[in-house]
Length: 102
Image: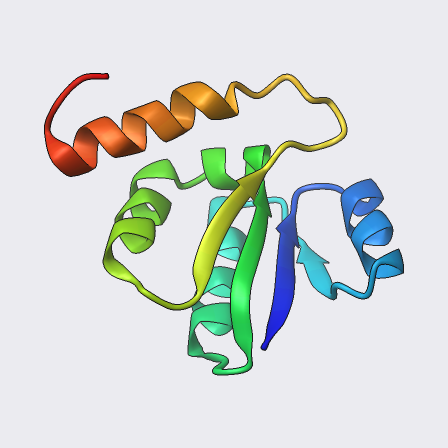
């Protein structure tokens, strides 16, 4: 089982490549969804890492896949800008999943 990265910038891709994680750089919503669908179809990929801006390009589709799929695990990671509010995103996913605002 391996990791795979879907990134909006080459800096993140290069950094994770140094750690042995392969990935792609995408710039449009269509590219994000296409690469994510390819990763979902690949049985060797256990965890898909996605930068915040990549997730932001198709948030509803990705949120639905996160809730629906047991494999691969889709994980949002902050990019080099670090301006994302990951905690708030996680709270929103939990609230949506259980129907209670936390």
